[in-house]
Image 1 (cartoon, rainbow, N blue to C red):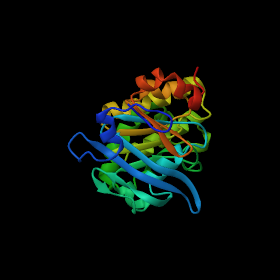
Image 2 (tube, one colour):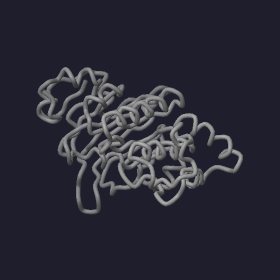
Image 3 (tube, rainbow, N blue to C red):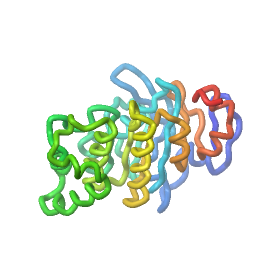
Length: 264
């Protein structure tokens, strides 16, 4: 566990993790963010943020509205202005890469909205997503996507605009999965979904981690749902680190939950 701000406790292992001093090794962080300050043009959002996501784990980012959670995801994917700090993927710096180049590194980013082509059919969306694949690879992977997301098979020749919110999220995940990413960045995938659909979407995220070995970084509005899913958690507030550790440690820290997450 590691706390900053008003917190005073830390362990030696998590301190080495938070300060970015641990050497890269097999089983180490697949994504490492060190002393990151970023935002949008002249709008400064993140300040000296540290973050690590371990390979084949689900790393959850929580915090109040406006805390910088989405900005951290967008910074990793090359969509923000980086003022200072470094972002590494598998030990290699990607801070200065474009989103197009980062996607080719097999990192996928799923924004909260506008994540499918509404006027195209489900199959056409998959074709658009598979722009890096040849015809043989595409033909081999489509059945795998339809097996993972059976609802897409039902509407394969229907336009995406006819899908419900939950079904669109399934399509967006299928579009990312067809390129077989190493890391997937999810920005509030259950926003505006019913509790039943939200649980189904989160279940699919866990399935992709378990069956395909994908490392997941998840920003999720429902804190308790996210903590049940995650292997580790980071709490941001006002663009700064407040806590990192296990979900169990955060749930046990009632003061942090009360102050920043509305938990009682």
